[in-house]
Amino acid sequence: MGFQRKKDLGSHLFGENNYMKIVSLLPSSTEIVCKFGFREQLVGVSHECDYPVSVKNLPILTKPRFSPVESSHEIDNSVQNLLKKGLSVYEVNIDLLKELAPDLIITQAQCEACAVSLNDVKEAVSDWVGNKPDIVSLEPNYLDEVWSDFEKVGKKLNNSESYFKFKSEIEQRLDHLRHNSQKQSKKPSVICVEWIDPLMIAANWVPELVDIAGGINLLSKPGSHSHIFKWEEILESNPDFIIMMPCGFDINRTLEEIEILKQKPDWSKLEAVKSNHVFVVDGNQYFNRPGPRLLESAEILFEIFNFNEKKVKVFENSWIRLEQ
Image (tube, rainbow, N blue to C red; front, side, top):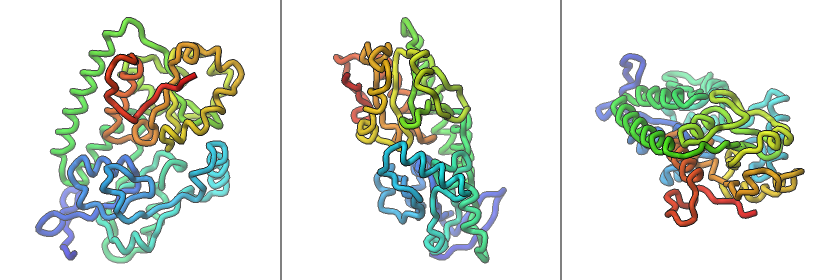
């Protein structure tokens, strides 16, 4: 498809129909682009982009340099070894990227272990001749920064209206959730596990989601990066709830490794275990992605904190209670 390129206040306008070819190298940004109504202008995605379902048919531009089917311990070792050697964790298909000739590439600069980095993308397009794509990099740590990235993408798409419409939805749903969570007689203490071996506690925006849903997040602070904890620290904190949300794992994948925790010393003595308040959520689809469905993530936590077997489960297939 031919079109003439123009510039307007740092954003692209294309052809008569303002058609923009977009490559998204993040599952979260793919969701943002689709949420704003630009699914048909996506021409390529990452190997992890799987929502909405329609994006699965798009050309895939990345692949990991490790086996994602390994155990969490083996994956961590592989990633750390790559980083120590100064190698990228993910590989970009440069030839295919050139062939697709996107006008906009969305990537990230937050975590080299999670997705293709900004440097990877810059290197991939460094020797292009003629018109080079516009590159936008997302790097959220707090919830407010997640929402700000939505606005950044909206501006790049010349469609701030979609962002402000969604912003109104965000405010309404989160205010409603905060209002309902304040009705709880007691706020439960919560630990959210982001990796099993080595043991890591979720940080970044997750503590804020816990707070909005009516819980007290333990061992990690909003906006900080996740890091390794000793098992003794978990025992000492003795949370009311344990939420399992390993990065990139769905529920079944997490259940494959749950025995690693259940075999830890004094696991059965934890308050969350004794009260059957250990839950497994789909971290890959919800909590790990700084995208539109973080709203659902907060609502899932609220549903878990107010768990009642007699209540209708709203978020089917997104969480389960771990049977002891």
